[in-house]
Length: 247
Image (cartoon, rainbow, N blue to C red):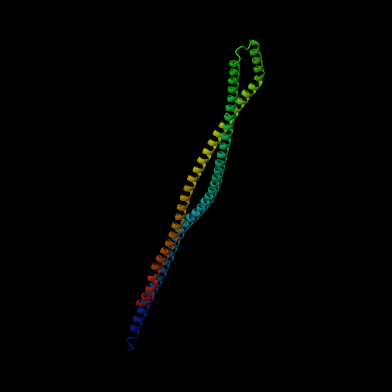
């Protein structure tokens, strides 16, 4: 037994050296695995941050654009309300003005017709008077003619008045046409603004949907990266004590 002492010591030392070598190898492998885990986590985190930054940036841009569209939509709605109010007011004003001018024109026509009837009756009266007195002399006719001449200023005044009324009537008709054209133009503007308002509403709805999509995409990306990190790290943590024990 004593003679085998050096041999046993050599064997023990050899085995101890192998164990130390194996332990050193395990330590190196452990360090290597830790480095791999560290760099893997760093790479995954970097990937997550890059994708998250892009999604966050896009999401913020969409939110800003949505708010801008909401403000523009509100401004367009206010302009549309004002335009509709103005159009309604102008329509009512035009209808009242048109009714008033039609009544004035009818009165002027009635007045001119009355003047024409009075003149016709006067001429008929003169004709009847001459027919009833055929012996009337040229002197009487001359006097009547002279008397008629004294009435000419009134006739001239009536004629001038008729011309003035006609000119005023033309001006009023022209004004009515201008008001009608203005109302038509205003209605076209209102219709155009309604179309713009509809387009803004559609665009706003689409932007809100895009913002919601990117928010959901961000949540899915965060969950996926977390699951990937857990899957890659858990098997190493579970097997590591077994590998050391087996060694």
